[in-house]
Image 1: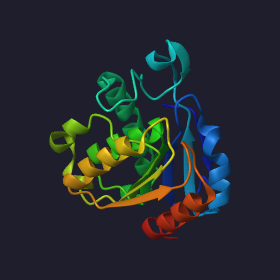
Image 2 (image 1 turned 90 degrees about the vertical axis):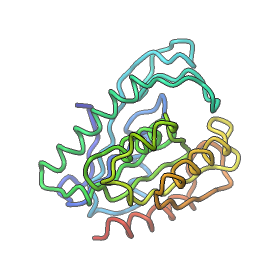
Image 3 (image 1 turned 45 degrees about the vertical axis):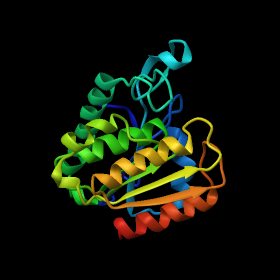
Image 4 (image 1 turned 45 degrees about the horizontal axis):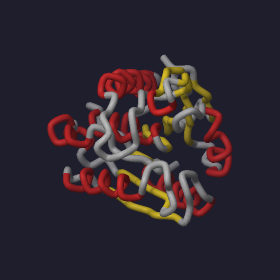
Amino acid sequence: MLESIIKHSQAQNCVIWMHGLGADGHDFEPVVQMLNLPYIKFILPHAPYRPVTLNNGYEMRAWYDIFGLQQDSPQDEAGINSMQAIINAMIEAEIARGISSQRILLAGFSQGGAMALHTATRFNQPLAGVLALSTYLPLKKQLQQAQHPANKQCPIWMAHGRHDSVITLATAQSSRQALEAAGYPLEWHEYEMPHSVCEEEINDIRQFLLRVLPA
């Protein structure tokens, strides 16, 4: 199990929010404060340290290895799937504590958002939704055969910066198209920002969370 920061631990709604490459769970603590939703439990796990090929093998917090950021770059399928199993266990632990799966949402930024999309589409119980920020769907060619019917109607809120030079807008739009082609209800947002979050986006996230995880 991953070490996590937990906010509002007694709440009966839960968001598991995964940070980007090289960051940690503290990265989105200020965003949780800005959202001001004390009836939602926020779990902010720290990814394990691992060598990252894209960064010359330097060890940093990463959900899986990254070989490149082009759409045709090879992907760390084994790493993605092993982390999916760990996130599945985190969801199941919340269910065991009495929170319905339909009151649990997966969120993530960049590499963390990729894990949120990958895990939610394959999870075997219906989830409340997915927040996918400045990210992409990994292993997207496997989606049609790997997706679980329990989450075919899982609402996906996907947002990207028009000036993102890390994960391009085209990469994100390609993932959006794959998810829509597979039948997911997807809400798409673009913002005038680089690879980051902005205040307008945080306000829109709050409205989405109020809708899919009502008090």
